[in-house]
Structure formats: structure tokens, C-alpha cells
Amino acid sequence: MNKSSIYNIWVKNILFNSLSNNAISLLDDEVDEIKYYIKNIEEFEINYPEVFEKFRNMGFIIDFDFNELEYILYKNRIDTLQNKNYRLTINPTLQCNYKCWYCCVEDQETKYEQRRMDDETIEKIKKHIKYMVEIEKIQSLYLDWFGGEPLMYFYEVIYPISKYSIELCKKNNIPYSSHATTNAYYIDDKMINLFNKIKLTSFQIPIDGNEKKHNFVKNIEGIGHYKQIVENINKIVKNVEEPVIIMRINYDKQTLKNATDVINDIKKENRGKIFVDFQRVWQIDLTQNEEGDNNLLIKVKKEFEKEGFISSYFAYGRRNSFKCCYADSFYHRAVNYDGKIFKCTARDYADELCIGSFNEDGSIKFNTEIISKMFSGCTFGNEKCLNCVKLPLCFGPCIQKYYETKIGKANFKCLHDFAEISLETYVKDRVEKQNKFLKEYENL
Image (cartoon, rainbow, N blue to C red; front, side, top):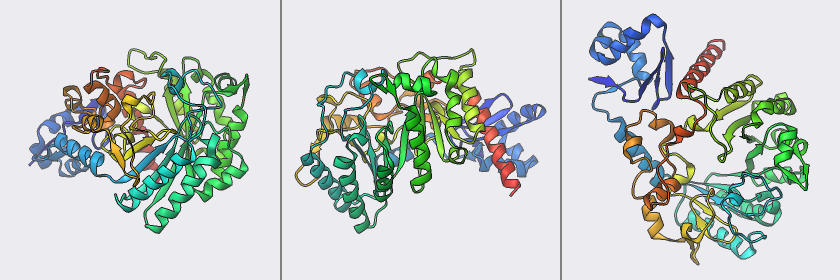
């Protein structure tokens, strides 16, 4: 016995399934017939067995006894609580060489000292990593450098912790990797050479539009460094082993008008290794037409893809797991430069958000009042999310927003209400990419 998936969505002549993320484009005269057979499964199987099997394989039709929502809830609990691939975010400092007007640290009026993480805290982090590897038996270690500008203290903080972690992971035979969110100002040839030695191969680097726009937003006493930053992106792709570059284009109402100027500043041979992530500055109001699209964003995104870049847009960024954010995992923590431990890096690092501190043996003494509220249920366990056909595209709010909703500090907000690309546009784009892939596959 079979049935239709509850996550089937019709977008004009396209049938899309948000759980499998598969889409199929139909001819106009096929739509009504397929709609009929999707509701009359037994006839479908009898009359068109081969097409029926294809629809099953793509997730449009499922076993009668299979409950998709229960499956999502189950997978979410496994991913959230049992996945022991440990991601540790570390802020070497909250200082930064730039003063971007949209910075979350400044916008939240975060109180912090103008200093780096001290040596005592560095040793506590090393001891903690040793505890997680040898006692907690994590499956892998992923160090995520954040801030502030983390590379301000590359030699004092990042390098020694990384070297220690690599040796420890090698000794215990577990995978190690690392990532840095950086404005790339401090990167030079010497540092790039050391990136390879400490396996720092993944980077998120913001570009705020073309040279004029970028230098207006990011500058030191009026002097911008766009050319230096772009050149560093090119150097990383060329010289770092197996690089992963996320070029994050933070855009406001003006940025996208000239954003394609950036394309020619990235060497052609490097573009296929760069993932362009379009992110609206969160203080800026939505730009949408009647269909829910920002036409300029769509145009710019396609232009980057046409020139060889990989790109995405946050509202429909298909997750590799069954949760909204990597920070939703129990095995993710963020250590601030002062040694206090948090869940989210997009808040003000206030004491009331601190989830714990380090014990002498490297373990964490958790604030159980906060942790129990965060992990007592899945973040999308509300009526709107549980009944939404788009749930598998976002998995609801992140754990920090879920917690703030529980304590009455915030109200629930749907991610898709803040999207500048409509579901229809996403699905059409999905079909185009599928067809392109199939064509390339057939030509092999």
C-alpha cells in the first residue's frame, strides 16, 4: 500500500517535494492527469507502473505506513542530541579592525574588553578539547574561528590551539577540520602557508559589493582594502589545499545594483571553488514584488552562476541535517575570548545567555536552567511549523530563537516571512539545475 507525500507542493506545472528536495516539470496537458493519479495511487501503479516507480523513488509517493512528520522529528532528535561530531566556535577576540555599521557585536551593544583571549583561557580550551576527545569520545573535531576579527590574533591564539588539536586528533585517530569567518585583511603569504599546516582550509569572507561600496562599508580611517581582500581570496584558492570559500555578499538597498562588478575581480579558474552566499543585512527592510521576489537579487544571483560561481540564498538553503542551524546541536558550543561559553554567536554575550563554564578537568559545568529549556523539545515543535509543507526546507527557528520564545523574550517568526526569493522561484531554479545536471550526465 502507498500514499502521497504530505510534502508534495504544486508550483504551476512543477511537482516539488520539500522532504526529498526533488522536482519534476510536466507538460501542461499532463498536469491534471498527474494530479488525479497522485490522489488515486492504486490506479497510478496499475496503469503506469514505470512512472509510478519513478515517482516513488523521488519521494512523491511513499509507503502507506510511513509517517513523514514522525520521521523528521526522530531524525531531528538524533541529529541534535546524538551526533557527536563536535563543532567548537572560538572567539579569539571581539575586537575588529573595521567598524561595519551592521555588525551584530556593535548593534547588540556588546560590552567587551579590547584584548585577545589570554593564555590561561587558551590552556582551558586545550584541556577541554582533550576531555572531549578522550573522555566524551567525540567522532570528529571542527574548530570554527569567529569574533570580532579572529585573524587579528592568529599567531597568539589560533595557531597554538590548532596545532595542539591536530596532534591530539591524529593520536586518537579522529577527523579534524577548521573554518574561519574573517574579513581577510590580515591574511598574507606567510599566514596562507601556515593555513595548510594547521588544516585551516575553509573560510567565510564578506564582500559588501563592488570596490566603491565595499570600501565605503569596510575601511580604516576612510581607507578601504577591497583589492587586497579580493586578491587574498584568489591566493587562498590557489595556495590552500582543498579550499572551501564562502564569499558572503552582505547587501542593502544599493549593494546589488553593482555587485556583479565583483565577478571580473575573481579569476576565472577560481570561480568554481567559490560559494557565493547572498545575505540581506538584517537591519534592512524586505524588497519584494507581488510574487514575493527581489528581482534584482535573482538577476545578480544568476549572473554569478553564469560566470562559474556556485550560489545560494539563505531561505531555501537546503540543510544537510534535520535542524535549522549547526548551533542547534548539543555538540556545538561557542567559547568567548573571556572563557565564557554560549550557544549562539549572534547575541550580546550577556551573562544571562552563558550556558556554562569550564571545570578543572576540561568538562563543562552547564547552566542546566538554560540548557534544559533549549533541549526539552525540537525547535519547530509549534503548530505552524508542524503543519507547514515547507518545514523540510528550514526546520523552523534556530535553538537560540526557540529559547528566547520559551522565556517570553521574543515572539515566533517564520524564516520564510523574511525571504526575498519566493518558493516558486526556488523550485523553478531547482528544476533548471536538475535538468542541467542530467544533460551533463548524459553527455559523459
